[in-house]
Image (cartoon, chains in turn purple, yellow):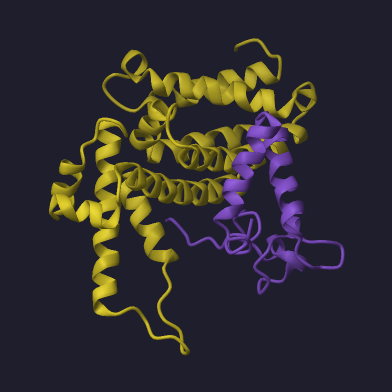
Length: 85
Length: 221
């Protein structure tokens, strides 16, 4: 009953349907929300701003607290795990 | 269907694992054994945390339940805080997956609230213990908790915006937190609301019905 769920390497969002993936392409391991207009994956700063904004908008977190949570979440994701600084 | 947090996490973790590839050999027997012991410890910790809470569960009892020596716990997890973080991290990953499965099939606020309650109800004991012991936990554990809430808040905001007026005009974060506060108040005071059993089973439908009435500005029927 619990199913495997691939998650976006850039923001951690579960991706179950093809349309959840960038460009609707299941071979891409980042989600449609983490995709720039040209199809490339967003930068770290863009991902950080996206997750922070989401937390503020939907859960009402203080912006600086939300940014701390977002940074911690991103640090564990494949796209940013080896990022320096 | 109800099942314990340990089982939910064991299934989830087993499915997340990948074996070796054509270009890289799989794990050795020793590595597999090490991973199994680690999994047993996390599973035992989840059960003990669900029963006794994050603070009060003892590593001696976790070791006993996992059928390993007390020292083995610290070979895998240098401190109890490390064991708590990994256990809650796996729990959060499993629960966000379950929430996403249920919420994706939900159309409208009524189904979203029911799906949220159903997912919590399946792992109520551990969810409740984390909720109660959350203040004072390290930032990593709190981040896992926010991740769980994010799995719901995304669908909640979409459902609220699509709901007929006046609900769609409500602030999504405040409305989400109102719902969460209601559910969490009942869960964290289980001894007052459902001392003999599941808070969600006993009060879930009434809480969801009441909340819908509130956001629709309706009188109780």
